[in-house]
Image (cartoon, rainbow, N blue to C red; front, side, top):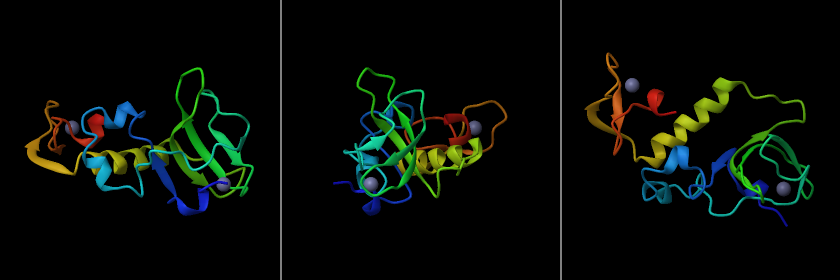
Length: 135
Ligand SMILES: [Zn+2]
Ligand SMILES: [Zn+2]
């Protein structure tokens, strides 16, 4: 069984994805559509590997962009659905998804400016950086 078709077009696993979520786990629990405790599928081709990002679910045939943990038993910490095998995401598309998730996981912005010199963007809540300097 897989849950690929119940998941939105992207997700992250907050327990593992520390770049995005080290500062605030609490807010990410408010958005369970995007922050998953369990990955949608573990039946994929090829096997999960830190150095590979393109996978296909062998149950429902969904193509996925997965970023996997750099651990021995690697598993996805971040995923975006792909339309086809040849669908290549640009760096900006991936960054855009991560920035969206970072805004959600911090429960939005504070009224303070980003601490980076000359940056006029508002900082994310609980960190002193804007989303551009955070991701
Ligand atoms: Zn699937
Ligand atoms: Zn900034």
